[in-house]
Structures are given as structure tokens and as C-alpha cells.
Image 1 (tube, rainbow, N blue to C red):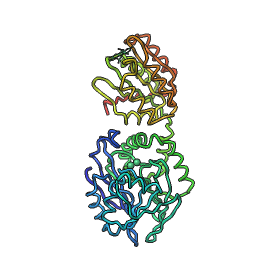
Image 2: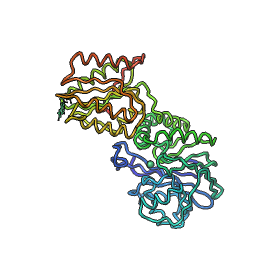
Image 3: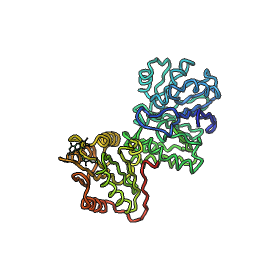
Image 4: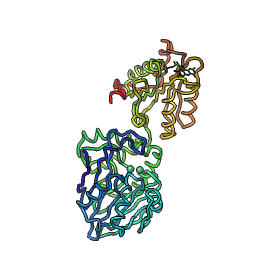
Length: 414
Ligand SMILES: Cc1cc2nc3c(=O)[nH]c(=O)nc-3n(C[C@H](O)[C@H](O)[C@H](O)COP(=O)(O)O)c2cc1C
Ligand SMILES: [Fe+2]
Ligand SMILES: [Fe+2]
């Protein structure tokens, strides 16, 4: 679905959605072959329009064109910046150049952030406090600070007349859904993996702020019928579902899943890992396997998406130049820095040629960042049948599911 979409959400609120298929790596980091959308919104009132956020800078021309379908740019009175990150504010300098009379509303930190990130000056800026209201053309806007979802200056806007909450990054997801709204069950099912991937990769580090902000919202007792984020689907059928999904995922609760991440240069670690995969699958849990071998390197974002709701991680990698084989070393750095203190349980599988050092180093990295290493299986060269038997025993000790659900999915098959 190339290009952009302009559509009415409800009442006088419109969405301007850019379907970005050009960005290969979001934030220059996360591989998103699925694409991403930037959802800006526009509220028309009798005293002028209120624009909420914008798109990435490279879509400036299209943004002006899309806005032109709804208003004359001179009719825009306010621009609410929910979040200064340039995926939403990239078009702000252009909008203010076209209409310098617009008053920018945002968190007190937003003005400097916007000016420094884009190298321009904002003429009219009005900082908004948590709980502050603005009345424009008979419409009321309520601003709610939502710190660290995703940056310190993030705010939400609640519009009581249409019971709609605009949440910017929060409750968003990657991919370019075929629909604007959560109207299609199949679409939602497909989309949820990308919601989890987005949450984990982009907001994962701040995940403890998700339940805190949700709790804050609940205490306000707002009547919320529509949740309109700045990425992905707008929730008008299941607003409670997306809030609960974010809350549960942020808590990193395991869901009968074992995720296996391993690197193998010549197959020794792989042989041992496969015994573990086979044993785990026998215990009726979902097993996700992410290899780093001579013909496949797994995707960091996909791995983290499965780590967040796993009960057990199996991490395999040999000793390499007195350290940890590089892809696993890199992975551990990424996982423990993006998702520290998950308390996830880990079994380490390692091999060595003349002096095994990797397993101990892996354990140190993991335990230092709040992961629980349950066991280490380390062997010289290829695993013997005794080593494999030990692996099976250890796994059956740690996996206690009863049902038989032999789902075993390899990343290569995605
Ligand atoms: C480039 C390279 C560096 C290695 N460095 C070490 C080392 O420092 N210490 C050691 O005990 N083994 C070392 N090894 C041996 C491996 O740990 C051993 O062959 C292991 O079985 C490899 O398992 P894999 O084929 O599953 O990756 C090295 C192997 C390679 C290919
Ligand atoms: Fe962001
Ligand atoms: Fe964003």
C-alpha cells in the first residue's frame, strides 16, 4: 500500500497516514521489511484546525499535499507535538515555514528539542502542563504527560467530544496494515507480532513506564472509545485490548515459549542445540529457533520480539579467540541493553577447542543484567551422546508444560 491515506476517523477528526515502505532500518537500527506508518491527525473546529504531529522529513511534499485535501494551511491554528522524535516532527519546520502564525503546543521540553533536532526557531510555542486543557472552537483538548513513552517530553491528547485519545508512539506497531481501523480480525492477528516487535525494539528499554502510564490513565477515568496512535492501526473496536496487550507485554511475562539463539561455525554447537530443541518441543511448548550460521544470520528485532514473552532462553555459542563467538557476543549486548532485568531463565550451551571460556563470559554478561542462568552445558569439540543426554535431562527439569503442542518454528521459514 504505497503513498498516503487521508480519512475521517470520527466527528471532525481526520487521519493523515503515510505508508513508509522506503525505511529499511527504523532508527537506523531495526530491520523493518514490513514497513511502518506515520499517522498525523487533524481536528477541524469553528475557530481553525488543530494539527497533531506530522511525518518523517522526506515526506514533506506529500504531507502538504495531504493536508491540502482537508484545510488551507492558513487555517491551522495549533500544532500539537506529542513527541519530538523526527519520525513525527520531521515535517514541522516545513509547516511552520508555510504558516508562521501556528502556535506549537507541547511538553515544556519539546521546544528546545524540536529546535535543536531540526536546526530552526519556533516563533510561537506554548508549553502545556500535565492535565492542562485548551478550548478551541468549542472543542476541548486535555493534555496528559506520558513520560518515556517514548521520550521524556511525550504527551497524549484526549478529546472528550469524540472520546478519542491520541497516544503517539504508545499503542503503536510496525507494518502497513491494509485497514485504518481494527475492523478485521485477520488483519489484527497479523498485526500483533509487529506491535510486539515495535514495543520491544523501540520502547522496550522504557518498558517499566508502560504500566505506570497506563495506571495514570486509568486513574483519570476517561471515557475512551478510540485510541489513535501515530503508528499502525487505530483502535475503535478493541481499545481495551491494545492497552492490555501493551501492559502485559511490557511486564515480560512468559507464554509457554522457549526461544533458542545460537551461533555455530562448523556445527558442534548446532548439534547440541538441536537436541535441546527436540526435547523442548516434546514438552508441549512453542519453540522459536534463531540461528547464526554460515548461511543465515537471524534478525535482532525478531529475536527480541520472541524473547520478551519466553519462559526460557537457550543460548548457544562456542569459544572464539578466548571470547564468545561474535554473533552471540553482539546479541547478548543488544538483548541485555535493550531488555535489562527481565529475570528470564537461560540455559547456556557451549563448545571449545583447547580452553572453554565463552560459557563463563556469557553467564557473567547475562547475570550482570538481571537474567537467571540455570545451567551451563559445555563440551570439547562435538557433543557426545552423553552430552546430548545431559542436555535433554536438564531441559526436562526446567520445562514443566503438560500439553502437547509441538510447534517448532525456525526463523529461516518466516
Ligand atoms: C576462529 C576460531 C577461533 C577459535 N578460538 C578458540 C579459542 O580461543 N579457544 C578455544 O578453546 N577454542 C577456540 N576455537 C575452537 C572452537 O571453540 C571449537 O571448534 C568449537 O567446537 C566450535 O563450535 P561450532 O562449530 O559450533 O562453532 C576457535 C575456533 C575458530 C573457528
Ligand atoms: Fe518515538
Ligand atoms: Fe514514532
